[in-house]
Image (cartoon, rainbow, N blue to C red; front, side):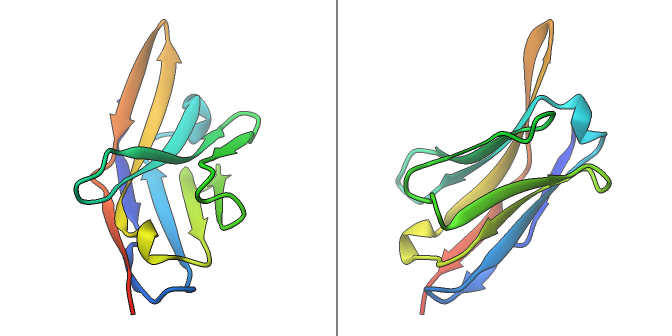
Amino acid sequence: QVQLVESGGGLVQPGGSLRLSCAASRNIFSINVMSWYRQAPGKQRELVASIIISGGNTNYADSVKGRFTITRDGAKNTVYLQMNSLKPEDTAVYSCKALVVAGIVHEYWGQGTQVTVSS
């Protein structure tokens, strides 16, 4: 089992920055992949960024490349999403997911955090 707790969301003006945190209840190096997803009202959930924990390889949606950065901190069992140059279309609920492959694939989700980009 993995419990995930997101934090760091809020209201920010266009062009501003936020850093989201996703704290895991166990050593993140026991997790294969951690990802950030987002869902805006009336839209499907989309993958924003992911990181392979062991090697640090990252992947980003085209819409956030060059603006968002996903990182991990093993000492704090936390994955971060640094979001810069925010746009109104980045407004969504952002959720963290952990993927654990142990014979079968296990998925764990956090509760989500609201990000609103508005002037």
